[in-house]
Image (cartoon, rainbow, N blue to C red):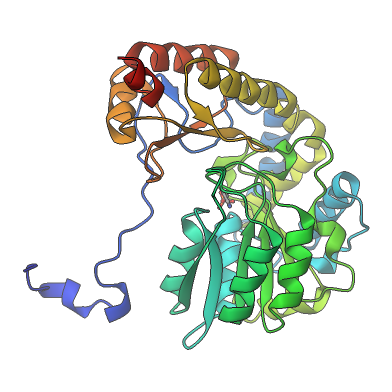
Length: 377
Ligand SMILES: *Cc1c(COP(=O)(O)O)cnc(C)c1O
């Protein structure tokens, strides 16, 4: 029997009783490869522009910021147009303090009590947490994995979308924690199979995708229930700023104004994000280098007898551990922090600098723990 809930805990909303908060460990270790941040600092030239722009707004911080963050929406639209193809306008853009806030605006507007959101597990742990915290029912759909690669094929996705008939669907491409991008056929088919749903494609890692992986922004025209979310936290190397955004039909973004808190994007956040967008090429300058390290992680894991999942992201999900939590602990004792995402026999490793790749591969070799090794013994 569990302890009776007493004190202020007894006052908590019943549907939140017993839930656990998001909690990736924040530990001070030499090699931190557990939250898919960039290991590279913000370039000096960008730091200078940031300091200038913050200086310019500092004296007017007595006033509320531009509630419509119009310049920022304009620049984000230009960035997506330039990098993904279709011409997008400022009124199709929306932003928040991290894409997590943008996702919560979507659930606030289109979910809620009596409504349902569908996602395909394993995927980003915040999708169900945000959904449930807003009183929306979460349906844990499944990815196909006969091959152990966690792919989501059209038939499997469509069938689950039809039977659930949800109000929201979360698709993550490239998927976290598995790393692989989703075919746009799946997005288009799920859109048609869930006619009452807003379809959210979470593209937090899109800039790292292998060549020839189009963005779901190319599907936006003519699909007014489709949303593509992005973030500056990963490829932009700007996780500390908290800036996420989305592109969708202008009528959909208009509805998000019903749920946002007034002036949700501070003047400092807007100024800093604009400074980074001015230097988008510099900010994205390490993406190719990180992709190289990702591919080295895949090759290195393979040669250690482990089973890495193909990755379009800045991390690799590595399978083939006898006891993943034990290996996670052993790596930590070597000063290497990776992520145990709760998938048996798997650990997720962020791609960082060449030195970090060397360190994590050396640590993996020294702690052992692959199941192929075990078979040899
Ligand atoms: C890291 C991540 C995000 C980013 O969240 P922010 O709030 O923008 O930092 C969003 N979606 C997925 C799938 C992620 O892995």
